[in-house]
Length: 128
Length: 336
Image (cartoon, rainbow over all chains, first blue to last red; front, side, top):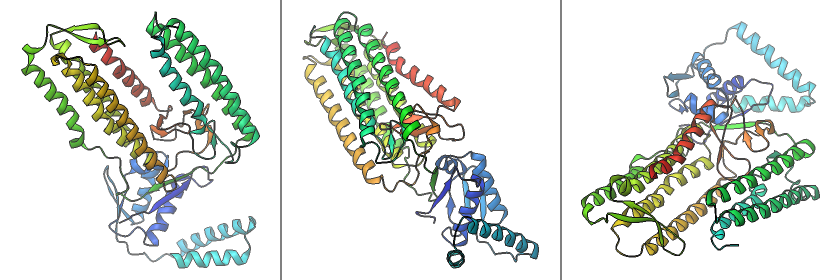
């Protein structure tokens, strides 16, 4: 069950709400805080609590369902399902590497020291 | 000043006391509806703004009391309602001026962070039909009792009394005269429970919502008791002042109990509430009215005061307001 688990987004962030919801839920799914069998709130409930449009949450749920994390139920919500991690293709790895590189550059540009950056990345990998 | 004027002046003073403390009934970091540093309200400038607001409130209070004392004894409606509305309008204007000044010169912005509980078992403000059917059953049983004792009801009985206990309005023994109080009770119950039902479904999952819905549900019980007692008055052979006073005292006790429970619940949960309401001042017109087309919530916890306000960006809100007006005037129409 997803007891006491919360999803947090920042509405005035440059990152769209849809992307924040997908990223936030994916972190919880990967690190096991949302285990298979957990039920997520309905689209309507989640949209109300986050203060975003219903379609934003519906689209986020659909994206995670396409990735194999969720099973959607008409009008009710979504259930976390057991998912076998697919083997990432070389193109996907290259795409993710580019995104990681961009994020790293952004962090360095904003003044995060390289040593801090390394420790943050190590901690993130270990957490997940 | 006539003694009857006091009946109209007392509620006015109660409103004045609430307005006096209103700017302070708010979350930390909010002042006159604007987002500020938590250290601003007790600062010299913060206190100056509060003093200015209270001075204006005081002046308008005096004017409203004088007008009420002068006109209300002769013309109860025309002499009491316009001064009250004038007071509310003037104080709202003073509040808006302070909001504008605070927002412009001392306002700060905070990240608009939202959180949603992912637990389906999060404390819900559920609607419990079994608990809520009892008041309607009580009204129905009272109606049945009156029907069975129809012949014991006088042909003409009092329904309104002066402050000295003398009746000044009468009803006759027909379905309208006998059952109107019960119908009015049912209509008010429907309205309150409808409001609780909408609130439970169209607002964010917060402790404030839980408390507000529970308060609405619980208040239906003393209200029902009031209408049951009023409904049974035609059958009483003695002076109805004692049972009516008991009902008023019971109502006041119930309201005090509910307020105390709400205060305890909200205070205990303030730190752990997972679903904060929108932070940006731009959503709050004049610091009082919430307008955010991007937010699907219809009810939003107030920034100043206790309870909820509407998200005026939704058309359905105007329908709800029309419904409230109809519900407010329905009892009057039923009594006609």
